[in-house]
Length: 138
Image (cartoon, rainbow, N blue to C red; front, top):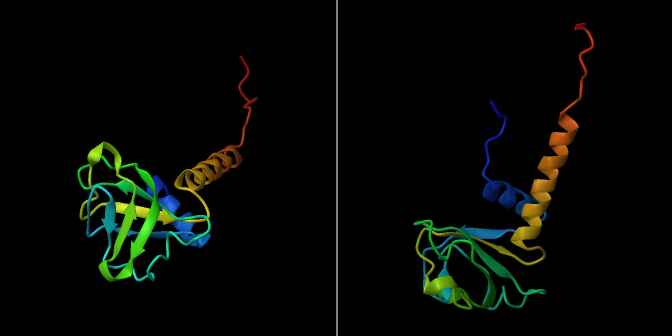
């Protein structure tokens, strides 16, 4: 039985939080060009004024369909409406209430994912000790 049972998204969130580059949440609404999260408290223009500008990644949608997996730059953030504006999501899909997202500024989702996978691979190599059994003679 594994000591930990985490999805890749959970591991990416944990690493993002550790490095201070995680702004994630659950959409409370959205459209073809926005995501809404009434739990966000950042000031107006917070995300697009980051250097580099923040990107939002929709990593889990309620129906498992588009725009799941979309990555878009945040072009506007309006605190009074809790709304982030992005270029259109793929396939004219809309962000929906319940969709999970992550916002990164310093790193991308893929960079954090690659780091997590490299750490898992390295731990696997270090945990496996090769042993040749020479006690059995033909």
